[in-house]
Image 1 (cartoon, protein in one colour):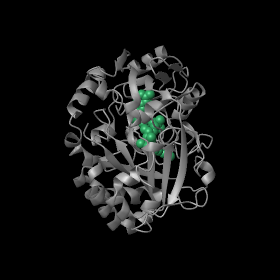
Image 2 (cartoon, protein in one colour):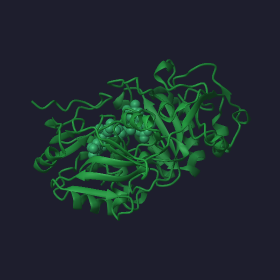
Image 3 (cartoon, protein in one colour):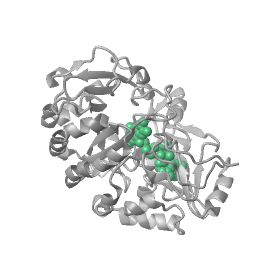
Image 4 (cartoon, helix red, strand yellow):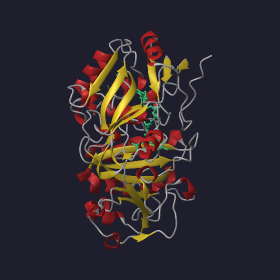
Amino acid sequence: MAPAPGRTWAGNLAYSAEELVEPTSTGQLAEVMAGAGRVRLLGSRHSFNRIADTTGTLVGLRRLPAEVELDGERRVVRAGAGLTYGDVGARIQEQGWALHAMASLPHITVGGAVATGSHGSGDGAASLADGVSAVEIVTTEGAHVRLERGDADFGGAVVSLGMLGAVTVLELDVEPTYEVAQTVYEGLTWDRVVEDLDAVTGLGTSVSVFTDWRDPDRTTQVWVKERVDDPGSRRADPADLGLRPADGPRHMIRGGSPEHCTRQGGVPGPWLDRLPHFRMGFTPSAGDELQSEWLLPRRAVGPALDRLRRMSGELAGLAMSAEMRTVSRGRQWLDPAQEDSVAFHFTWRPAQPAVEAFLPRIEEGLDPLGARPHWGKLFDERALAGRVDDLYPRRGAFSELAARLDPRGALRNDFVERVGL
Ligand SMILES: Cc1cc2nc3c(=O)[nH]c(=O)nc-3n(C[C@H](O)[C@H](O)[C@H](O)COP(=O)(O)OP(=O)(O)OC[C@H]3O[C@@H](n4cnc5c(N)ncnc54)[C@H](O)[C@@H]3O)c2cc1C
């Protein structure tokens, strides 16, 4: 008997699908895709909304062969879409190669992460999808399609919200492996962030500014990840920004155990053990939290922080922690980083009705500044429908591509209807 579809990683939603099917070959996958009335792909369930949901068949890829094939000459790795970034990262690290970025958690699948435009952090780091050079898709007609960087349709192929078909394989850009040192600092004020954003985000290759919003004026921690082979990339001295190194390891959430976090204290280590915030060896099967994130044009940081600081009382009541990071402009048509962006992330307490009631209030403040929500987290989906054409100028081309690859609309679900796609 097919396993039940179950719930999201956060446990906040039960999938509405009738069944979960896990094919063991691409031939079987093609049959399932072509035979299902409504169908949707499922990754590692780490999205917080109904983006992955369907009333028909959910398809998981974890039983497909775990392909990881490195081509050092072309500087790409072919990876099965159902593998996690952590798994692929470990395999290429063994062979002396690396990726340009990682999300905060290595346990998300490659196919699921890039489909929603997931990203890490850094002025020079575009989203994970930007590091994809080719995708192979099994469509709802059972056809096999390969799209490569440079193809006319490639801009719609990676941040696809799962609307084109089952991505079976992705090719990811790789570079020679590198080491990263991570240091946590304290003492940064929000005024300083607004006055000198370039210096703050230039403290390292990847910089995350954390707060729990209990103090509207001060951040709680700044996590700086620096490539050891590129010390010249640092554009400011932490001390000049009023920062001092933390006196021990930290978790970004007050009371959280730092043993789940990647090594701090400036000790160099491989990129895949430092770029994520959480260790690969620590695998929570379910999370007692919710998340939202909005990406805004970098120039909007002042007014955005102004609005958030005015809501700090309410934010402190709902958020366990919040993170500000930067993402550089991506090339995909639906990448929320349509321009160099600053991203405001919130890890909410698991209080979905209260969080959902609060979302329109945040968006009232951030939307006029050009906020684009993370596709996989909680946001006011109906409000996006009225803005989606303005926010994504190539949305028409994306819808045309989706209609061509999925002419019967089998991959359409309530989520994509609500957000106006
Ligand atoms: C603890 C935690 C930390 C996170 N950290 C970050 C972060 O640092 N940065 C960030 O940007 N986001 C972050 N996220 C969000 C997360 O990256 C996204 O929600 C991501 O999409 C989850 O990937 P998944 O494999 O769980 O996909 P799922 O949630 O299972 O699916 C997401 C979408 O991808 C589609 N999909 C999945 N696999 C395929 C496939 N093979 N072919 C076609 N479509 C497919 C699904 O249909 C769905 O539309 C975090 C989430 C959690 C829970």
